[in-house]
Image 1 (tube, one colour):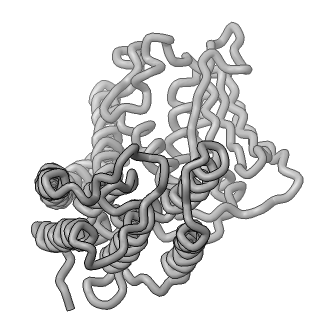
Image 2 (spheres, helix red, strand yellow):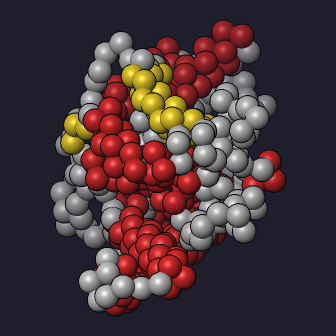
Length: 457
């Protein structure tokens, strides 16, 4: 079995996808070749009045029909599952070799029955060699090119010496040239050089590009592996940082709970602020851990998720915050059919927890937040809308970037990493969904311009 796999192949899936695409080109082009041959024959015979014998014309039409028939067979084989993405057996490259061989045989017959060295179709040999150079390894296409050159030159000299009958098209030339030795010799030499140079150039360029693609793939995989190692390192370090902060929180809770004795009001105020800052530190650590986990995850495992339930649970979790700020937080489900959504429940919970948390954080006391679930064609739409501080227009293009915080929150509101919306965007993208926002929102009033996030799943 010939090894047709190109050297330097690293990503076999990319190779098979590329060859399958080029096989499809060949099959599509063959339909045009069939039509072109028939149009050429009937136009030259009946419109241009060129001379064909009845037998010659019948044979050429039959060759065209054969091209169509074997093209249909090749189309069926390529789409039937018989072609496997494996170095062994019938793989896409083997199918390419078969296609090129039958095409060369068909072309040889067409060239012979249209005049041999006088045929206008000889140029298509070069066309096939260029296509073959884009698919087959060098030794294979050079071997085929050499066989074509030897066969064509042998045919030309056999016709010159009368070893085989010359079948030409009457009316193309004023005098026959197949019996001119100098012309046959020069033409054969030029044809051979042209074929080999065309193969050399096409194969060299294709091989160089292929090696470059494979090198880039290797480099990309190395970068991805390095990124995974980095994220694992970050997760390990950040998780270790979280432990002492949690211990500090425990001691602060003991002191604030008066378990270590009474404390002054001034000290209690300072310790309460320290407790809040430690909560922010834990939240920042959790955000970094979420981002690292997302980057380490490849494909997510999906199950049926009741999105209304996920939102209700998040609303219940935030009751203390909304009551403390006197914020109205409501959920309205406008869907006609309460269908579940395929997705990762934990990730979707994290995404909507971020969106709802942001709305509460950046909505002033006495404000309102509305969550609306509605049908959006093939999608389920979830809108989280508030009348909070909004997002300045100059920040609209950057709001989903990692570690970016809007210009109107950096000094007025509690600290953050700017990773929340980035995490949301990554989660929604992993679920093949989309997220958009508008600011001001439909709830804009004297209390705030507001922001409306719409998630489509």
